[in-house]
Amino acid sequence: MRAHRPFRHLASQLAAAGVHVLRFDYFGTGDSAGDLRDADLAGWTQDIETALEELKDMTDARRVGLVGLRLGGTLAAAVAARQPGGVDTLVLWDPVVSGEAYLRELERDALPAVPPAAGSPKPCAELEIQGFPLTPAMALALQALDLAASAPGLAVPLRILVSEGEDACRRLRALLDGRTSHPVEVAHVPSPPCWIEDTRFHAGAVPVEALRRIVEWFR
Image (tube, rainbow, N blue to C red; front, side):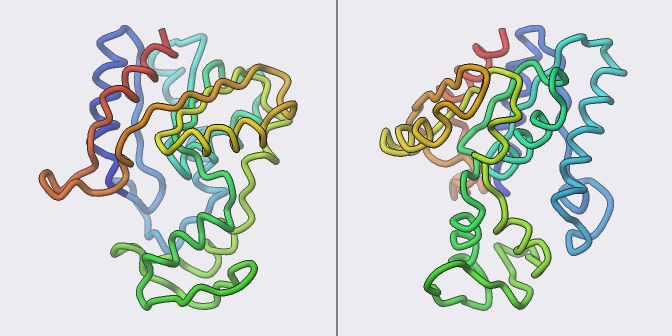
């Protein structure tokens, strides 16, 4: 939600390195049309596929890549798995690994407050997450996400950037080890979460080292 600033910097750095870049907002978010309450994950994955086609049409690019942060990374992996050979570079930046864990994380920030529940969350009412609605249908779709389930279909080298700790890197490597037909590179680049607002700028922080690593992967 606060990642506009770091992604703008990333786009500028990639462009300076000679890489064509297309940033877009999902249906119902940012400057895109639609109501967020009408959005769903299937539509957002279609948005990614449409963006890929648009970039190819505009630039005649023969090779394309995806960079996705958090939920965007998980959706990018799903798109790459559905399009063998259609994505040449795939970078997942702190991707959502478990939909259930992600939903619990969102519920902790929700209004009205949702007390922690044992076992899997069972969303039954619309919640407000930092001013954005989370419908029951979207919550159920998020709950079903599983990054490891997309891994076997990936026909592209997978690069994952983790800004948390080394333990998170090890867990992710163990989760994906042997599940893909191509190598998986997990890089630990400590940095503040760029989707959390920096109160000094009222925007996400700019993780310089993380951006540098992503640009290197696209060279």
